[in-house]
Image (cartoon, rainbow, N blue to C red; front, side):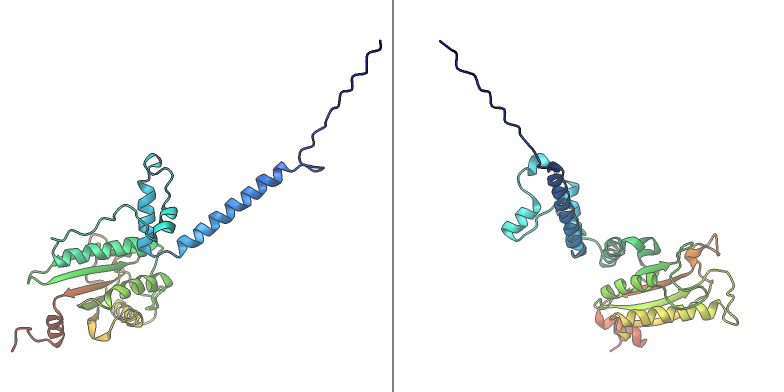
Length: 267
């Protein structure tokens, strides 16, 4: 009795076709990831500063074990609200002028982040019990805010004044604007530091008015040349080249009376 022949069929598996295909899948995943990343950057650029701060605070304290399965974007899509850690707010018992000083510092830290080293904020009471906030807008070494020897603002100076104007235009304050130079004599013909500091103060005033600050909020515009340096131990320091905004706080009646040069208590 003859044994039937045994036939073995071998199937040759071909993965990826003639040119291979696994790399194409990986490349497609890479492109999808890049598209998602750039879409995320675009969305972040459209956010308001407050929303950006909320997102930053969310990821700063994010815990994968307590938040597993629930993303902030999924929560926003489901409820229409973005819940993140609460951003610290000012204590309610701060005196008004101190609170305003802190508010301006936070505005500068968030809205002028790349230029915040140019701005110094100080809230104080004067010897006669008047409440003021001083905002010093300073030049730095190799980082000017005006063209050299000129009253023409550079883009950085215009940006700082624009952001401050947006905050100042609705506040019940009067604004003094001072121009200051360092002790270096100017080299522009007959224009001295007195003329230059005055012209820069006027330039700052016009920039504030252009961005919405009413003219009747301006109390005075003066130039002091190099007579009141910010860095007293070095009168040639770049920080002495600055614009000083002094905000005079009080009720609307008081500020208007002060501007007219009469006592608010005058009948």
